[in-house]
Image (cartoon, rainbow, N blue to C red; front, side, top):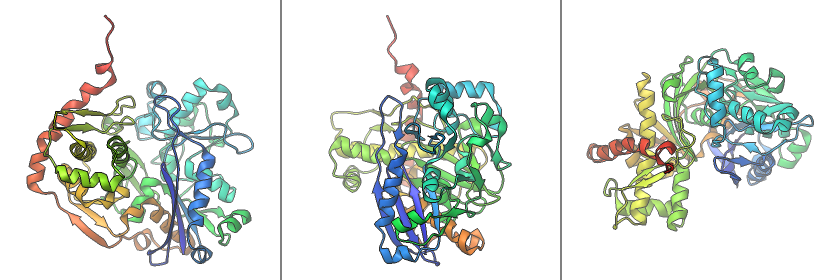
Length: 487
């Protein structure tokens, strides 16, 4: 048995698989996000530990006792700043925090190697500009910082005492030489840091240590090895067999991601495409990243009084796809691909007297699909071929939404059995590789196909005018175009 733990934004998921890759146990625990100021998004690092323990302990004790290895996945980019005693100095600044846009511009202007060596535009979501912000606005915290960890790696520290991170998650800091798979002294220096403040780097299937005796007792399992693991998207890819050059997936979690595996480092920062290491040795990946995806479903459900996501999908189905004029731009936390705009915010457009909860629900489903279509267009514009997309994440549960997504993307969507399990499954498979060895191609195989949604040609045509209007609308909702002008 192998345990995979995914430290997400809205919760922690723990999954146990057997040697055949079948899920034999699961547990979850919720997390909350704090937004004390506009653009801010933070979490208490110790809440990750409490949720992790709760999720693990929710699994059957007999299953836990049989675990032989643990793998970690987690939300990327979160800046967890530790002092000399390895305790957090402040709340962690999360991936969807937009406060550091000014620091991004300064880092971009001063250090062009962020795009060439780091492979990416400096965006507020990444870790590097967050530290630049702390350096400027909280100098006493910055001076006391002895170690910077990503969310899953803080949990690892509490599990094992080891200060380590894998390549895929570390690439999202913007301090990694992505092609060389090592820390870049130049990129760290640009933020006033050095390699002594970074964790040891390992590959995803490499063991970093073992559970401490205290944690093993708390969790009711032996002192098993803990694998390097991966950032949530890379681990999710490993979980559904996206491990060969050209394999691609669509992740419908809090954020939305189109992920393409590459056999070489292929940066394309011009259209805000991310280029990172994969969680497997000698592999990389590209991503189009959208900060709000399934989170928009939860948001509009609260807004309209729906009982939850299932109720919202049912309401949308009553309205039907492309049957109303409403447009939704899903930029509730800003946007990455292709706009790189931390300050833009979401909008409903083209509302009329007949607009009701059903049509608002459908507009949200279409708006997220249109944003993902922008991301796929950016990937294809860089020469990346995407013939089909494997679908994972909580949003994979809705076949109705899948029809709209397939039509907006004009790409077949392959839904896999257990695909909603997400990154925790990949983390468990990385643990299996760390303990039993073998090749990723043998262990990280695609689960059986549950169903395939082909794009419906008629719906593609009906959505096309709305997609065009969606793309024309973005410039009109940017802050510089809606800020009132003084008389």
